Length: 289
Image 1 (cartoon, rainbow, N blue to C red):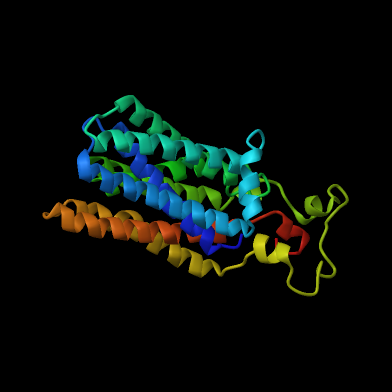
Image 2 (tube, rainbow, N blue to C red):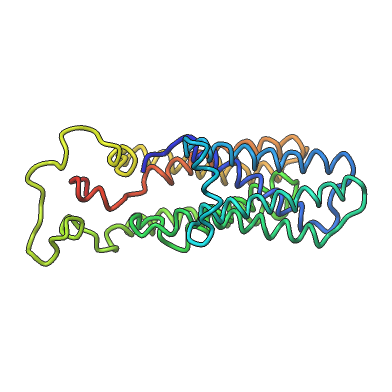
């Protein structure tokens, strides 16, 4: 799949923002006053920036508005409603904390809705049977764990971050390892792609097109395997390997900020790989499999 910058920005920023809302919502002693204003403004700003990038990817404003109408069948629509609900509940919780009148149940609700929004985002990809690498329980698990780890870093929950980051690294490594064989295990072949399964060996004599097409540009993105391996290593190093020791150093505010920057950079690289290495079965019809 083509790794659109808008999708990378959306999934990275919104995941970080909703992850922060989760930790602010479940914190038994959340910040109050002006400190609460800063944290909730940051969480809402990240979420809104990510959602704006998502709307930009849709290219037309009416498509973004229509997304709200398909909640019965569309994970994109469910994501939109969950995001709005999470931001409203989080805003109410933040306002109560700013006034030093904490409403902890409202915080729990905002945390649950934030988790629901991240889950809906992940299910947009996990539901796609035509992309075997994504069509797996590990996709929502990876999105949720990334959001929680980033939120823990951003909210200053160091102990939680030290637990979640290694868990995220382990899940990411396993997802890459298992995902590399999912396309082959799906049973999709040029024969199934052309509807000629059961009629012997099938191979294209001529390409399905003589030039670039939208389908190939969007669904059959090709990148050298050696580059993907390098990006995987860099993504894992920045996302997990570097932040963990940084969190154990003295001056936690300074090194915690460096760990956060490193983590976000790693998430960006890992999300680029997430989109770039996803193989759509339509590529088989075009001789890409």
